[in-house]
Amino acid sequence: MREGEIKTVIFQLLAKIAPDEDSETLEMNSNIRDTLGIDSFDFLQFIIGLDEELGIKTPEEDYGKMTTLEALITYIKSVEQQQSK
Image (cartoon, rainbow, N blue to C red; front, top):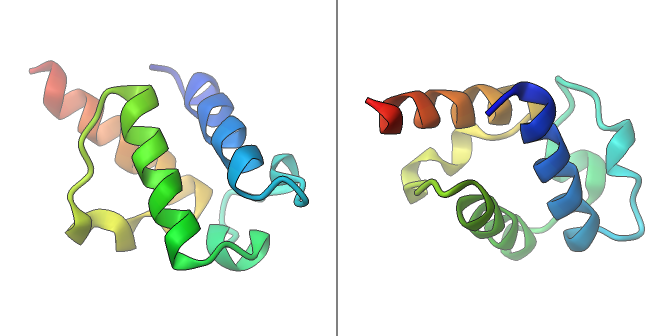
């Protein structure tokens, strides 16, 4: 999946989790939770949504690797590459 497609999925899910925030203005190096005011439960729901939408499985110990938009995209791309082997 290309970066633009991944971003689209991320922004759609963030819009459901934080409907009062404009996730489209999220910068690549901004902390997702802090910028959008997402608590830990909402972030968990976001990760579960990503897993379902993208067909991946994110282990709990990797949640901390997904703090920024850039880190999240990099993580998803690496998981997709590993799964395609």
